[in-house]
Length: 174
Figure 1 (cartoon, helix red, strand yellow):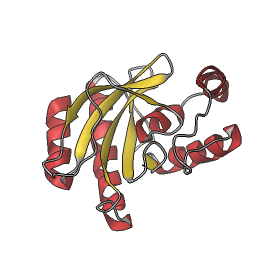
Figure 2 (cartoon, one colour; figure 1 turned 45 degrees about the vertical axis):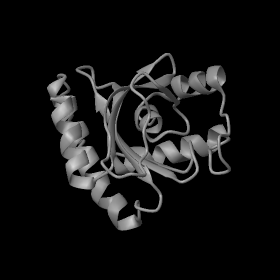
Figure 3 (tube, rainbow, N blue to C red; figure 1 turned 90 degrees about the vertical axis):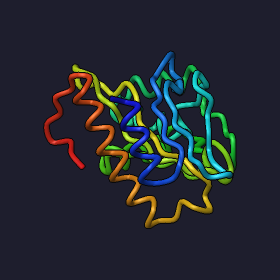
């Protein structure tokens, strides 16, 4: 099911689609379908990204308890990979509040300059955010209109994947 959802996202938006799973306070790329564009964003399968500055990580963190978020920050820190990376716990919490409100996260050059990522959480049967589906691409193609369109598709894919792994989410929709 996951592979079909990723292929659909690539076909619909012409950007790279991935699924990340939280593991020991980082996000691990589990599946990925690359964009067919010459210039594209990719993370190798098995590659790890930070939770505080990646769309996938923020999508998952947003639905965790404050204590768990603070533990991740204490253990992994808030390393600043670009000048746009969130570098304070309060800024991260503010960003995660917005993620909860929208149902998706945006990494706008926080992990790498020139790259944008939109991600939505995947929930397990206990309604815990454990993974995320994301679409990433170069900033030159990820304008505000496209971001809004991709966000809707990413949320829909994440909701479908959540249901496929047994989540029964009430009040969490597109």
